[in-house]
Amino acid sequence: MKVKTIEEITAALQPIADEMGIEIVEIEFKQGKEPALTAYIDIEGGVDLNTCEKFHRAIDPVLDELDPTFGQAYTLNVSSPGLDRPLKTKRDYEKCMGEKVEVKLYAPLKGKKFFEGVLVSYDENCVEIQDGKETLKLEKAKIAKICRAIDFSGLE
Image (cartoon, rainbow, N blue to C red; front, side, top):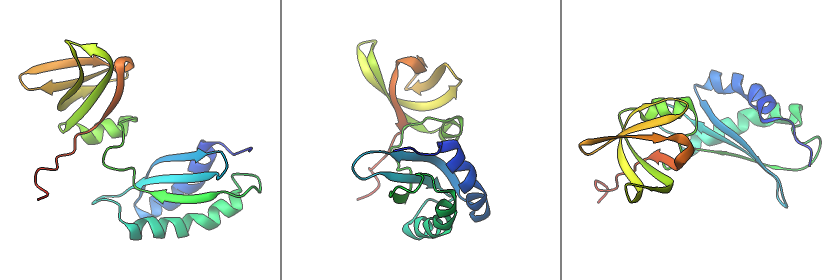
């Protein structure tokens, strides 16, 4: 199926997101038997079902006009990025600065493939985390996944 670029779709939706105070975290299009366009959004205070519904209703007519699939049917989804979403963008790293993150490596470092620590710095090549008393500098190319650590201890 031929689809317009993610950049074109994002550019069409961005003014609506800006007007509603919503951050478009990512736009994703999945091809296949049931094609789907998903807009992952975030908002100060967190995303709830009402926010997703309002954004869905606001972008639906814009997407109808844009016709991202050139007349082919698809499902439109609006979702929060999820608590355990991998850090991908500069903005993701900035939002997690000073917070605890989980890092999974492709290959062991010091006998371990999993580290947890506070994100203290990052650049396009490396991520630094404070793991206990030690600061670890990890090459991004060796990181399989990095995401915010979720603490379930206070949920009882």
